[in-house]
Image (cartoon, rainbow, N blue to C red; front, side, top):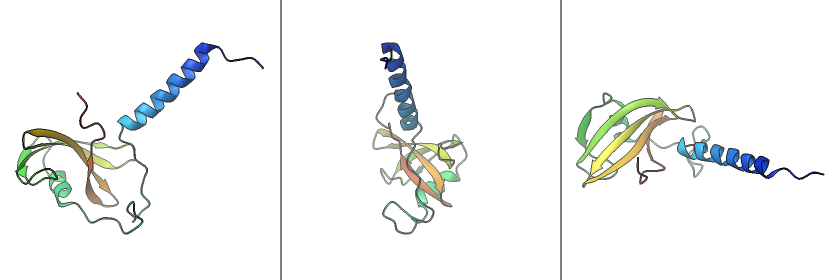
Length: 123
């Protein structure tokens, strides 16, 4: 049995790393079973913050209560389809001088708020 050349092993490792990085960057999370939350109970009720942001026009801002503070400046981004096939929207929240990035997604028929995986990374 011949050993694989070093370049083939490095290419395989690089390819595996790219797949993992792409999955993390896309915000992939394991899908929930229909009608259940992570604890196995009923699906959560619609998040009022997420529902309000879902109805904002793209590119607009509003002062409203957010998961970060009562008087936050919330800016609605464009809609997109997540890696799990859910309709989502990027949201930027300025609260107490700190900017937060998150997403709202329609999951099992209700709008929910999801934190950005790489919120503290430089962009």
